[in-house]
Image 1 (spheres, helix red, strand yellow):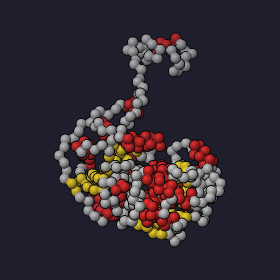
Image 2 (tube, one colour):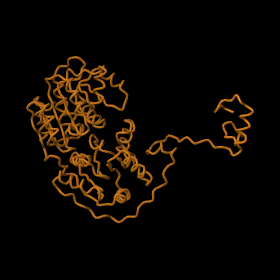
Image 3 (spheres, helix red, strand yellow):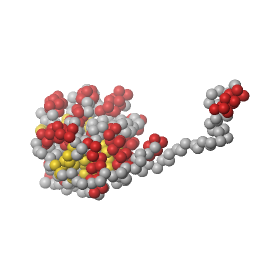
Image 4 (cartoon, helix red, strand yellow):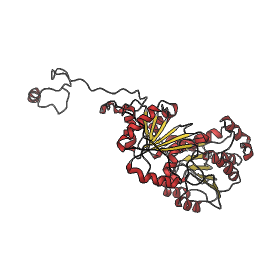
Length: 437
């Protein structure tokens, strides 16, 4: 089957062809025609199987065929993370390159004024995270009364991140008559309840068994002591000459620490997590994509929304507490039919987590024998005043402390000896503390 058989317009086919795609994925084959019919959809598919294009392509076609009334957005795509919002926004721009439709992306962590200006100019498609969207609604800078199509992308993740109340608040701002599309990589009772209250007689689309990993990803486990994980990871990267690897930790502090240790082992690394500013997250991801950063250490904020072409390796440095998150993590590799490898470093304290994951997958993950290697001696940790340049590529200079002469009091600003300080106080009683001498 080709994209022409899906009923897509010539402008979209032209954009698809420019990206080098010739054959639609299973989720695209099933979802696109149904969405073009105007039906609500509840779709589930493995991560990395083309869900974004499955709703973006028909959404663009439907909007281009309908007359525009005013400047208010006509389609709303809600995503759980900034990275996923940016990815969806990029797809809208790419596939809509030959259509006269405007789009905007709004999320937190960046200035709100440019977003306000974009909304004032008028948009057809709005891609947003729930929190920042509600900020705009509270300020009266966005009008959602003209929404014709609502998409909840990675709906399960939004529920995991506690967005259910925000989603319900957004629903109250939308017109009752609209087309609803709910896409999710995993299903749960919470997703079913959300779908029951949101969708009207939806078409149910499921292209693979629930909560399964893509078959293009090979999965293995190393049983390793917790204290040896870092040295094993360094060995795997060096011995395998891995040029690009995404490593997952459970905590933000753990991500920072591991990235610093890898840099001290001469492996270019950067950390990405929720405490990082949006600009820092963007720089880290850009460096990872262009090759200047060899290892990206991430928390589960990166388990969704990171679309990296031909990412060869994913490592679970620590297993996730939620088994379904394992599926999303390893789904960053093996995308679009490419092969990928997922390695998990499992300590004795994570045995139950591994069993839970295997229960969700309904399979046992093969265990590899531990390789023989010598622990690598790390370089000395940078001094506190140097930590600001811990990320690769940062060319900013570190300010040095001024040297202090041993000839006390010989220059302005030098610290005088105790006896000299006392004499000066007696000679200059009117001088205030800290005044220049």
